[in-house]
Amino acid sequence: MPTSRDVARLAGVSQATVSRALSSSSSVAPATRAKVLAAMTTLGYSVHAGAQAMKTRRTNTVGVVVADLSNPFFTELLQELTLVLDDAGQRVVIWNSSSNNHTDALESIRTSAIDGVIFTTATPSSVELAAAVERQSPVVLINREVDGLDCDRIVSDNVAGAAHVAEFFVRHGRRDAAFIGGSPDAATSRDRARGFLDRMSDLGFPVPEHLRFEADFSHDVAYQITHKLLARGIRPSAIFCVNDYMAFGALDARRSRALAPEECWIVGYDDVEMASWDSFDLTTVRQPIKDMAVRGVAMLLERINDPTLPPRRQSYPAALLVRGSTPVRGDTPVRGDGM
Image 1 (cartoon, rainbow, N blue to C red):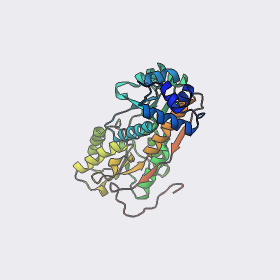
Image 2 (image 1 turned 120 degrees about the vertical axis):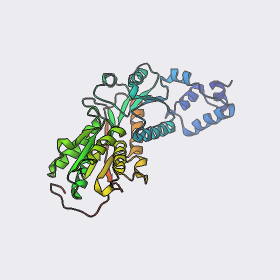
Image 3 (image 1 turned 45 degrees about the vertical axis):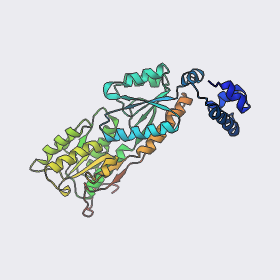
């Protein structure tokens, strides 16, 4: 079996140069690194991952903590993250937060089994996460923020994105709107609720308590809520759901009541791929999932290389995409500032 000494001899360099080339050190010229890689290919030499980790104190392995994968947003985000991490030469370990495995992920950082963790879900109740950030463990939150937790995070402008929905409803005369939120523990749901409800109030059309609901990000619960709403004698003219997964449930309920889209508009948030399918044709607020994944991975790798970096926050603008679930029939003037 060839050794690094054999690679050095064939490439005409020292063993130390071979080690630096394999660790992508900037001190190795590109031409020298190319000679080392060519010698490795010729000899059929491969680096033993365990031995390399012992030398560099790096495993080139990153953990990703995800929520309910039945929600297509998390499936798409996970796919983008794994593609970007693979391009960066990182292996991926996935934990499902529904089984509280975020504790295992953080323990894996502490014991150096992995180099860092990307969280796509987190709540203020995670004492372990707060402790990990305090220890300067490499952690990045994507599509989540936790009050009082000053760490790297990637978000979209949830407040502004939801406010766009309120403005859209009022502009087109849909002023008796209902709201279906997710979980009060999730910052995304709270921010979208604040953006939508506050803007509706600012425009002179506050959403009454009997038209405000929480569905715990569940398709089935959103379906049940919408089905009951649409069975009322006086039903809302529009419904805003704080993610597409719940909006799909609302659309299914509207379909089960044999109502046309004009009779009750439905809007979601995220713009997952399914939202553009003809069977849903969902108006929604777009989050740039790919951009968020790329920046999140870059932040984590930078954090792994330098744990002393100050915490960073990247926010992306959110855009309303109008589709067939809200058929527009011309503008109606609105009341309120900035309209």
